[in-house]
Figure 1 (cartoon, rainbow, N blue to C red):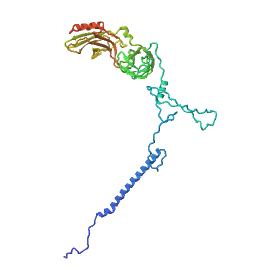
Figure 2: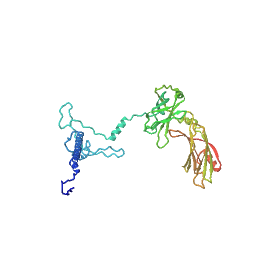
Figure 3: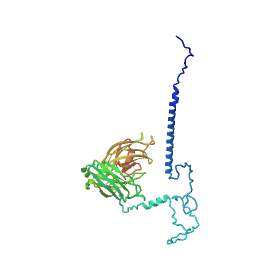
Figure 4: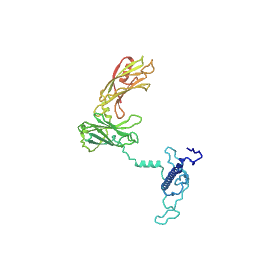
Length: 434
């Protein structure tokens, strides 16, 4: 067999497979990417054109879509010219507390010649419209409007406390009583501007439901128009229910003042289901019952311990307290203050006794007297306040009692007896005062 030399025969070169990719696939990818870029640019240009068109439409057509946005500097603020004056200034309302400046003399202004209203031709030197009056400031305009629109409230000169207007409606489907407090008319007031009245309402005899209206400021004829719905009242229970309204004047710094009350028993009314009944009742004073029956008495026991500088006070009971509710009952409790040189230094109070005019407390309290160990009761006094507890409004004072060396009557005698017999419990009855 004949062997061929390496140089014998045709030359064979390897084929490069990557050449086809560079030749066809590469250019396809490039063309696709270019098409995507052109599409994105076209979409961006279309969005910009629409944006400019919408902006030009908002500006009212002052600038066309082909005009560029030109920066406009802000306009310079100019002074306000006051009518009737040649100077530039802003007229301010006069201060109510500032002194009145002297009136400045101004040269007389020339008056325009009178114009004949019958003539049709106006002179070029005369104004075509009459000169408007000088406008008032906002504060003066509001004040004038308030003075004109404020209703004139009647004043009470006959000693009456006014009237209360309210409505009643009963709903059989819900077993609910709807009480609408409408308004009050002709309320008295110590201040010239009038009281700050509000109305408190409760259902008697249970005293379970208690509500009150909002406070209307500075008026003798407040308008409320507020509805209060009491659920769970069957028709047969209405005859035993009494509406008790108390009209009060709000005081931010002290106890609210009681103007009067209205008592409306439902037994004398014929309520129809779904029909509102409008009623008006005269407000009656509330303090007459205390003046007629007195304020009651309290039984207090005192014990002075000089070695420990302690004063033990045992509040035993009270009797014959005045009726604070229409049902003839009260919710009394006692608040005690220890005074040293006329200043209150300690405070204690008992529990509330519900629905009774003769409460039994049997509660003991211990007060530490200053200036120990040589403490005495010469500069010490004890103040007792009997109050009627109320869930909605501030508690009303039934009566008060002051025990001390500077007291009078039985209070002074009881105090001296305690000083003379230390370490002994000495009890005595004391009448409550106003």
